[in-house]
Amino acid sequence: MTIADSGAQPSPAPPGTPVGTPGGAGVTTGVLARCLGVSPMTLRSWDRRYGIGPTARTQGGHRRWTPADVVTVQQMCRLMATGVPPADAARAARAAGPDRPPPVPESAPPPGRSRAAGALPLGDVRQECRGLARAAVRLDAPALDERLTAAVARHGLVAAWEDVMVPTLRAVGRRWASAAEQADRADRAEQYVEVEHLLAWHVSTALRRGAPPAPPPAAPAPGRTLLACVPGEQHTLALEALYAALALEGLPVRMLGAAVPPEALDAAVRRLGPVAVVLWAQESVRAAPALARHVAGARWGMKGIRRGPVVLLCGPGWGRSLPAGMLRPHGLPQAVEALRGLYTAR
Image (cartoon, rainbow, N blue to C red; front, side):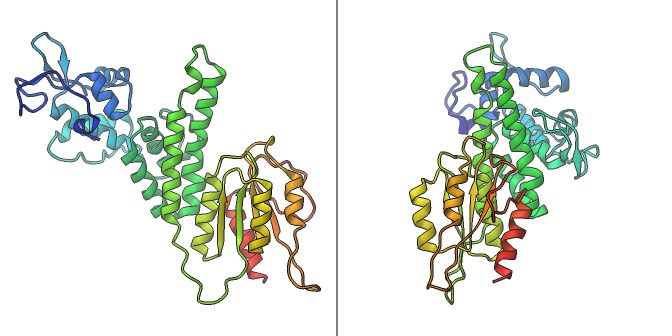
């Protein structure tokens, strides 16, 4: 995002005067902070620590960011989004200047695991999570899209989900929960909600982009897999990941999405006659064992060859005790393997 994209207005200057040039006042730290998705305090800290700061002044002596200053700090942010530490990113951005992209510092961490938390409590995760988390905290949509696309291209969709997307989503969720538990002001409980929502939206976009469109069947398709959240459950990202993974396998799948009412789920099962039904529950209060048993007991077909679906209970909301005959895969790879096996056995 550029300053022009923000809609923010710099101090008055003659028409046609570039922002930050003599006769123009540049932009304030607050305006630039909003454009970058960071706090003004963060920009002031970068100025003190790394020498990335405003170089122009108004006639009244107030510091302003020139176009060259803006380019330098944007370059720093782009490097940080790839996992480069802030000090190294600032050094490379200053050395490059505003007219060319900065080189990746030699000290940039290689791909692999990282214990550096960055802005979020990431723990021991792949290096890509660091840049993804920083982009999320900055609300940097282009960087999120770039990082997620690169992760899927590099690791494949299943590994990118398990090792890059999920750890970062969990870190954002933990930060939000911590802010809510320790709230000392009315607005603290809402901290990081915007970060979580933006990250989730871009993860969803990356998953849908990774799923190939279903081709029209040349022959009657085998029974489908039906994906649904239990009633009241709004978390769909894990099901979206499973949908994309099954589509990549070439397996027929239908997504019903969030909070499917029991009557709608029952109607879909009887209309489609699925090989399997995946029920997702994020929280234990949403888990619906009675609904799972009802779906598993559905039968269709001619007398003597009647059949029903295999039910997979997915998500942390389901308890350890399972109704008879149901599967409980842990993680996306196990779910894909279990469903692949059902089609292979047909």
